[in-house]
Amino acid sequence: MAISLKGRSFLTLKDFSPEEIRYLLSLAHDLKSKKRAGIPGQALKGKNIVLLFEKTSTRTRCAFEVAAMDEGAGVTFLDKNSSQMGKKESIEDTARVLGRFYDGIEYRGYDQALVEQLAECSGIPVWNGLTDVDHPTQALADVMTLEENTKKPLDQCKLVFCGDTRNNVAYCLMYICAKLGIDYVGWGPAELAPAEDVLAWCRAEGEKSGASFTISSDLAAVRGADVIYTDIWASMGEEDKIPQRVALLTPFRVTPEVMAAAENPACIFMHCLPSFHDFETKMAREQRELGYDIREVTDEVFRSRASKVFDEAENRLHTIKAVLVATIGG
Ligand code: CP
Ligand code: NVA
Image (cartoon, rainbow, N blue to C red; front, side, top):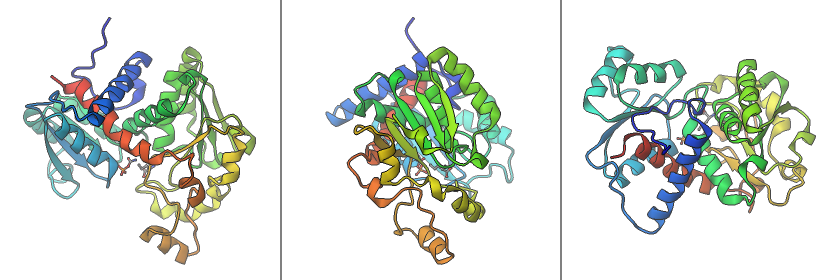
């Protein structure tokens, strides 16, 4: 049967079948080719979407805006200071109002329950633009980037996530690996291991797809990686944890030695961005003054030929466009 995602929300990849995820990936590749060829889209003509950001963003916001505009939709952006939501108006009432105005809602914030509530109360598709425990549009772009860079079928690939293996990006990667049969290794300190229920869900799903899940602090676990992936050590809202994270995560910084430990010349480096790979940011400099080196990857790896981070960032646009077109497109 033909796949249709019309009217569906996109809150977590756990809700989607492998076939539905492959459909979104295939649509994203198609939309990327069309954009490259200068073929304009009209799939969202006459639609309007609203973007709610309680946390800051560069890629996700711009990807939603450009994706919507490329396909003919109107966009409203609201940051945490420019709506009544949560302060003078409940989430339920806000959702019910936005559901009368718009065709879809993007939400980035803290609580996964909030994005679920928006979906429940608004009556229109809601897209998760990152919460404390998930970032599903990121994982879609990451697998698209892997597909562009590997000659192997996805179910023969191995992805190693280095560092804070219980953060939102690690979790969404675990979910997509579980769905698509990609072997997953979380290489980090035991103190930051994934939650037992997350691991149990992934292992159960992996039984169907063939994906294995290994959590290890041993560098040997990196061997055979097709992708070495990392993220910042203290996610948005966790800045007060920087001292303890630096102590725990410095041994898991991605260096040329870590890349070499893959023993795979075709291994690529990926990162959701933003990244601390040098001291060209205010935060990295301020923390250095305090005695903390917060770089999760060296500049050498970040700028190496193996690094696909900017292709990956571009693919946020094409995958988010695929999600919009699939769920609200005409
Ligand atoms: N990767 C990502 O979500 O980037 P932004 O925080 O800039 O949206
Ligand atoms: N883990 C990071 C991802 C940013 C895209 C954060 O939540 O800040």
